Image (cartoon, rainbow, N blue to C red):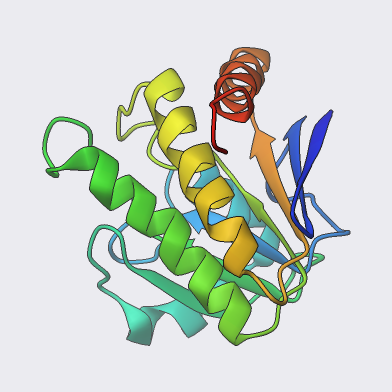
Length: 182
C-alpha cells in the first residue's frame, strides 16, 4: 500500500476488490449509463450489493459521461455507492476532461453527503479502453487538485484490481508529487 498526505486528506493506493472495502464509508462504481450490472467494477458492485441496488439505481438512469449519482450500498459493507460514467476511450471526447469530471463530481457528492472516506476504482480502464497510465495521471491529478478544498472527505483510496494497475498509479503519483509547485 502506498499512502501520502495532501493537506488533511490521506490518499492511498492499494490492490484489491472495490466491492470489499468495509472500512470505507463509500465506494465508487465505474457505472454504465443505465446504472445496471455489467462486467468489471459494475458487475462486482451489483453482485455484492444485491438486487436492491439496481432497484434504487433504475429511476436515476440514464446518466451521461462525467456525471455522478449516489445511492445506498445495500448488501455492500459501506454506507453509499457513488456511480459515475466514465468516457469510452476514442469515442467520448475530450476523454481527459470527462474522466476528470467523474472524479470531481464523485468528490462533490461525497462532500455534500459529508462522507469521510471513499474508494475509487480505475474508472474507464476496463472495457471502456482508457489506457491505465493516462487514466491514472488524470485521476490522481484531479484528486490532488481537489484535496485542499475538501472539508469532510479525509481519506481517498484507489483500489486497483491488478498489480500492473497499482504500479501505473504508483508511478503517476510519484511523478505528480515530484512536480514543482504541487
